[in-house]
Length: 228
Image 1 (cartoon, rainbow, N blue to C red):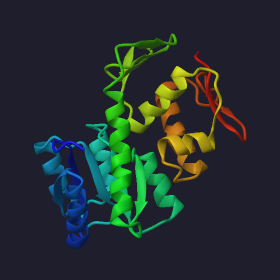
Image 2: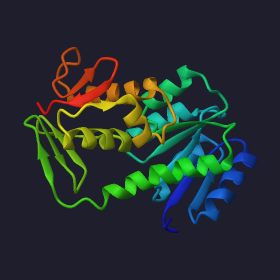
Image 3: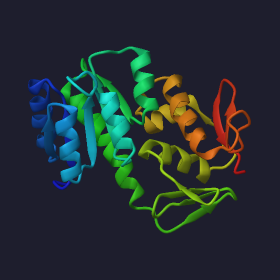
Image 4: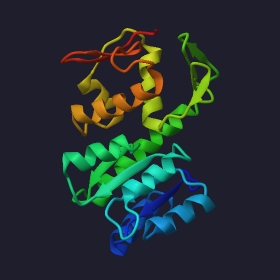
């Protein structure tokens, strides 16, 4: 990874933050650490951040609240780091715009691997040439990563954009839950993970959530993109 790739690690447990910094710096990431949401928000505004590892339970503003604040300004990849493995917390984190959810029992090596996977997917988007996919109500510019819905620019998280691009480049092709998990989550997760992300994506591109025009569920199998 390039030394210019900056990771912001936010955790009130200084020992965890420093351990992750050591492992990430070994992989040539530039690492900034913060102990609470206020400090993290200040650092986010002062630096060019490429990825955030975000603890949930912190004094003052928690990780969920900070994520919501960041998502109002940026689509930077966010990986939640939590001591809790509850599905409720996981779903909430993904719904708020998180790109991954990691339980703290994971080894530092696994966490670094998950960060690198997110960064690889983000970097691959920069290699796409100028091309626009036009589906009437929706247009995707694969060079600028802009998504236009009904004439207005829609802000998607990196994961939402990657999902939409895959579907838009393969209209009417059915992608199974297993294929989506393997492609975007390295096989880690379950159907809830996919449903949460696609549900959030539908809210941004569909005019009627009860009758989706683009992202159609193939019951028990997966999803396909109708193309309008």
